[in-house]
Length: 83
Image 1 (cartoon, rainbow, N blue to C red):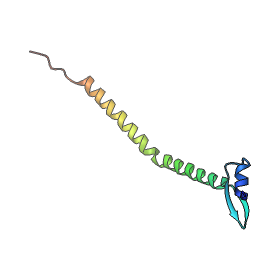
Image 2 (image 1 turned 90 degrees about the vertical axis):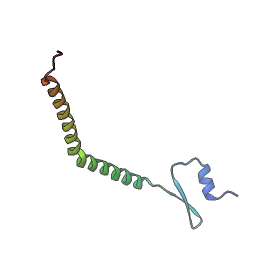
Image 3 (image 1 turned 180 degrees about the horizontal axis):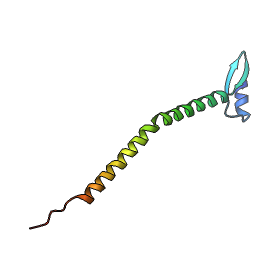
Image 4 (image 1 turned 180 degrees about the vertical axis):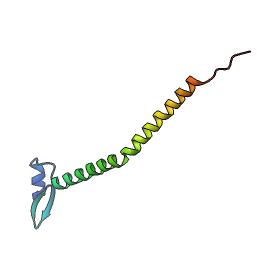
């Protein structure tokens, strides 16, 4: 004899968690938990981008300054003539 949970599983319903409470099968959806978890992940990523933004800009500007200095040095370098 199939239990109520097995009957629900065989009926084709998916993406739900099955629990047994007092002999009755209950369907529990975790949609609200998924939304809150995705919201928290999005908030943490946004905070990380906001906090790290100035450091990324400073790093990029430092790299550009380094390239500019090397180009400037190569253009103003005195070439030694061969004797």
